[in-house]
Image (tube, rainbow, N blue to C red; front, side, top):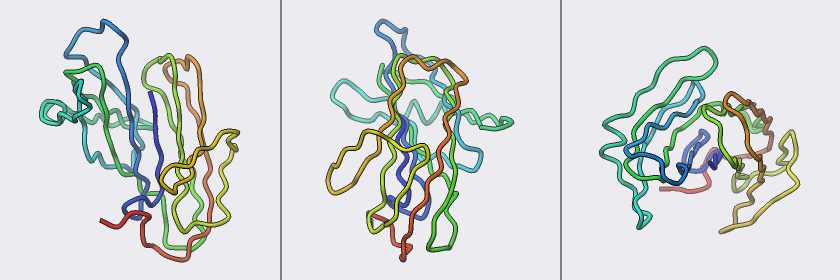
Length: 174
């Protein structure tokens, strides 16, 4: 499972992308479940076919959001072992100094979990707590990476993000 947090990528929010792969031999269709921030809106749910093409129809038709105490639960069926969903989370205010917390909580046990946090373009004084020891630069974006082996269902991981940005223009303008 890979969870990407991209603040101010294409709007004044955080784009959150969940990418997962079922264990080999899993029966299909399979139900996947993710815990999502309560103040988020689901943009898409998809199964990813063997040609890396997103198949939205069945996933979107079966998706359901169940309100929870700390997180809402997103559930849908995937017809392929690979799946992805995207949502927008809205913690960013109107100040030039951005500062927000977010937490990720696993809904299911997994072998490997990677969390990726993207630094917005035009941001300065970017800081993540806890800090990352691993970064990558791809297409001009800096990504801060966190890797976890065998996290259990219900494991919660929290981050604080802060940075300065003197514009509300997103990194990518559609």
